[in-house]
Image (cartoon, rainbow, N blue to C red; front, side, top):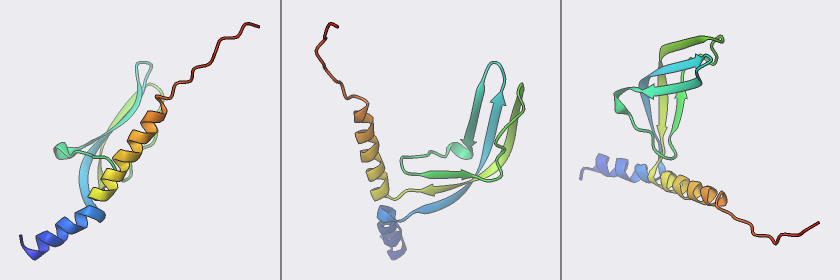
Length: 108
């Protein structure tokens, strides 16, 4: 493994990688649907801990309309340590939803 590859592999544990990606933003506010979606080009996959910032994206559309625009997104990739931490915290937060309380029934 070359020295540059080793440095990049080491930085992947704690460092972040920033990538610019073209994307499509779709916003719809009609009687059938109210949504906003961002699709990154090239099958770019977002993983736990990654951050996506879409530049100059519209934030609203008049009622009854649908808008589709092309923009650029900045994707900040999480390092391996941050990705593992994000997965752990997400799992712990999800288990809070499983909390069940049992109480005796009382007649008033």
